[in-house]
Amino acid sequence: MRERSSSLEPAAAATVVPAIGVGTWAWGNQFLWGYQPERHDAELEATFQRAVAQGFRFFDTADSYGTGRFTGRSETLLGRFAAALPPGERQALCLATKLAPFPWRLGRGGFGRAFDASSERLRGKLDRVQLHWSTARYAPWQEGPLLDGLADRVLAGAATSLGVSNMGPQRLRRVHRHLAERGVRLASLQVQISLLAPEALAPGGVADCCRELGVELIAYSPLALGLLSDRHRAGESWPVGPRGVLYRRLWPRITPLLEAMRAMAHARGAQVAEVALNWCRAHGAMPIPGLRTPAQVDGAASALAWQLSAAERHELDGLALALPVRMPANPFQSA
Image: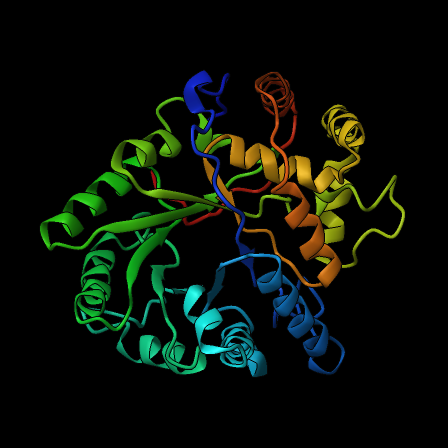
């Protein structure tokens, strides 16, 4: 059982409020998101075009997004959509992918083929390469050589920057120090952050560590698989499959939080999802919601037009910490 923080650091409010990025996990995922090329690809392309038009510049993907016959599908779609842009617009984007440290990917060259395959799917525009998760909890000896291999690629100019995911402050400090010794700056850390997963923001946690080290903090699942978008009221039209199971377990017990979010959204003529995204931004994290429709892009873009007050952030902090339920933790999250 993971420890729960009793407070969030008052100083955690962001002095420079981050932007919002675009997550593409659902682009190719059948298990949770029901992806079908003939039904979704045209709308995903329209989603990408609307995101670029609305000023979104950071797009996050992974070589493990899409399984079976859709392996690498998210990267393929993102690469294809970006390649269709005018050169100047394409150059302005940051396409970031994560490489999975599967057990058979070993040694300094363990990511060699995976890196090349991702770069090909992204049509040569691989701006930030990221380690998808830490192996510290089950194979700590695997992680260092793989990161060295990624650092080699960055130093050779094959990628512009390097990031990591699912690391706690202890591992992050160690990795940051090692990469600095090699002359490579650690650009970013991705961890799960939302009002249903606030652990990273606790005093002494990884958010504090990122501020200290100058590492960009990226919040994945900021809408908690859609729960915090408040689109499914009182069990109506709940998702099928694993997401539906999660909704049934969590929804009845997060009512006080949702009510407060609705009031804040209503006061601004905004959507509840905007409140969830701006809570992450208020804590210095760039949220990367999964966007699958142009309407969702517009909703995320609207969140950029306003910010939570300190009092609102504090109220949401308290409600989040008082909840009796949380999102499941990533099993690979290191200390």
